[in-house]
Image (cartoon, rainbow, N blue to C red; front, side):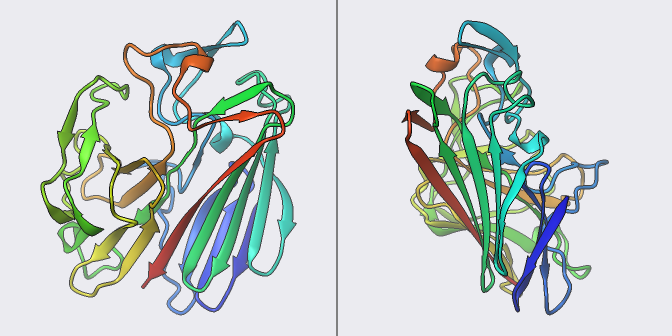
Length: 293
């Protein structure tokens, strides 16, 4: 089921399936700023990545002594979440371990996803709780897709991905199969921006590590209109789009964990995690996105 909240700047719609934002509209102009989810290109909008990001080594994990098969980015994006709070500016959803999750991942957990509007900004917070497990390890990340061009008067090369400060973004490679291969490369050198081109994502995403910038923005160069994500505190920031040409959307993806490695462990407890919670502990993160249109 879809739920909407609105202020004088933005109208946000979230689907309880996946607790996924599916629309962010400019109230004044009616412009849609999230990707529409066209299945012919990429059928999602802004999925939550949990309990892991990317792929599992060998497409599987061994957890509590049992082997489980796993696709990309975990299961939270593919199951129903329960609406637990709705106010004029806030939507909160909850996903807890149950008959739909335990066959996929044998751990008790609570995942809360809270959306809050504040002016031209959407704050999306994720909170993970460990109710009973001796230790709960997990990965987590965001995957919002922003529609480009912003209007019919612009094309791909009218945009750039702009850092807050000068960067030489080092990227870890997961080519060609989506698993880390031990290699790295520089996406740019001493640059304030990455030009958007139809070829930028021809080899899939770019996973930038340890950026100094607090923000990364998708900017329309001639007008200054922008969508700005606050990436401070995230060890990994990915940019990605589907291989369709021209580029139809750009994802800015702050992650707290990485995809698996080609030679990585398949045991869940040995997989690098975003956090390891003791029984009764919780952990939170927030992605704040400002739409200056």
